Image (tube, rainbow, N blue to C red; front, top):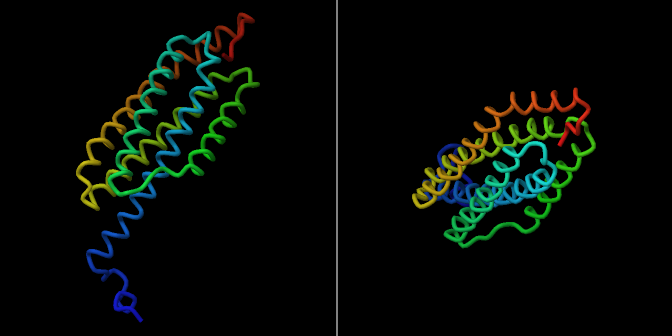
Length: 185
């Protein structure tokens, strides 16, 4: 039996704990890369259907660019550990992003439902980046902290923008719907 296996829980040596934390960190980076790819797919599906909401279309296009940069930052972080993104995870979540976007398309209140989903998704990403920051600190990946903080700030800004525009989006939808215009997109 290995010496480490005989130790009591919580008494792992530092290098084993750090190695374990590093594995979790790299896995989390790979997962977040897939989430960013999913975000791009989800938002790209939505922007083509926002002709009645030009401010939202412009902000989503901007955030697509941010999400693409966030994926590139994560690739940089993974390279530092001799790892790469998971093509399988990326493809799976991209597919799910496409399906999620298509699920709301036939709904008359598509834009409102997408706004709700985007708000929730941004908060998921915020939580993910906060967790990755804890892991980066734990493993001492100083180079990762700045890149992860930048991505976190972009996600927080997007969540704030959605929050600030939920009321006007809902009111515009209501106005268009009441006047018999195409309201959902």
